[in-house]
Image 1 (spheres, rainbow, N blue to C red):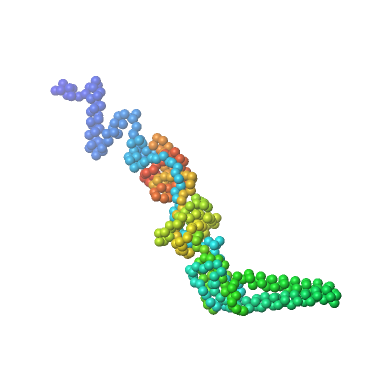
Image 2 (tube, rainbow, N blue to C red):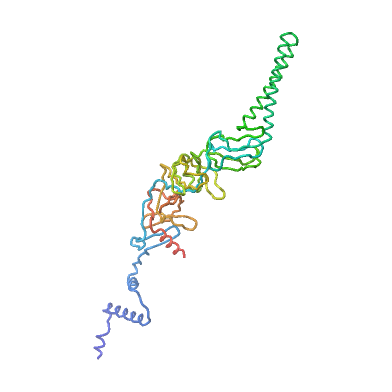
Length: 398
């Protein structure tokens, strides 16, 4: 019986059998205690020289690192940054205005009362055409002044002639002739001054106290601020009428401050009316002042208007062409993400490393965005999946 027991017990010469029996005992104890030991941990416990595989994704404040087989690569695409022509500024709202060089303000040269009105807002007039009449006591006084000066010249002419005759007959001293001629000269100067004052009024006299105000140029009546029996004076702030030649008009466009830097004098534009009509135009002036309320820059656009399609005070939309020759880096809009107050893109640094780079965003249009600073041409950047990477970094911070 002792021989049988000796046959079943391990001997010192069977170390493998001893270690196997110990492992079976350890496993039995673990199962009994409800502990599951992963196979890979058991393997590493038997081979302590081996280390666990690296995590597929590692994120920090500067960027993110992905292993070659990381699942995030399925949602991330890389592209090479390239320069392209500038994006055109967005169309700007505008209003049709008058060209000051083709516009004349009309008022009354003398104080009086409006007697008759022959034109209305929107009427076309020719140069010299009668517009309205004014009854004025000042006009009567001016006419009286001219008539008095004319009569004075006539008297002085006769006196000078008489003095000349007496001197020739030696019946009067020569100094009397010189004095008479001097008085005649003064009278002639007074007459010339009165006539010049009357002629400078550009009016058509009709009676002693009535005159007509005439159009100083041809054009269209674009403003009117008078009526019959209205009292009018030369020093009023607002003109009674305004006449403008509408063969050319100015469209005043309100451009965003960020777009104004790419718009220059002489640039070609297109004006579009609310009815769908389009007209070619040219930038005449870009204001150097920003409107403090609307934060816009006024751009003056000159547009031909022979058919009068652009009416003063009407709405018009101005479309600008991009500056020729200038280029900027352009990327898809989804490549740029916002990290707090900054806009960033992810730039590939090699070995699966994608680092955040701050950029200055310019104009955005049709799914693309211009980058003014931050990303150099030739750099490899994340064109799709930037938001996913940003979220991974945010999760790593928590």
